[in-house]
Length: 126
Image (cartoon, rainbow, N blue to C red; front, side):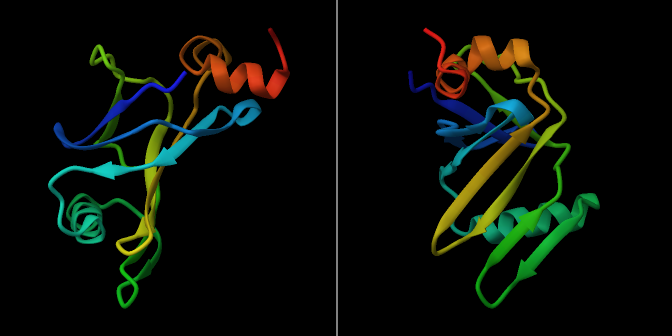
């Protein structure tokens, strides 16, 4: 079951993801980011992090690659605009190869309900 989730930064929708992958026992989902009307995701993310004091793990401007820490203003919403609850999300990637969003702190209950396909795949339940 492929659901699409809205990604908002400081209340503004910047794209979507399907959270194609998960580390189920760790409570983490991640997936490709489909940015909307963003010329350089690298520049957007870097500017936001610098302006808001968000830590950057890796930054290679020559490649436009960035790996951030959790961004408090980065929120994910389901198709009914309910915000996903967890400890937060961050970006990793580069303009040329694309970006991934990772969202952590997903409870077992939320993993079983919202991301049932990942839960079932990992635990091989029917």
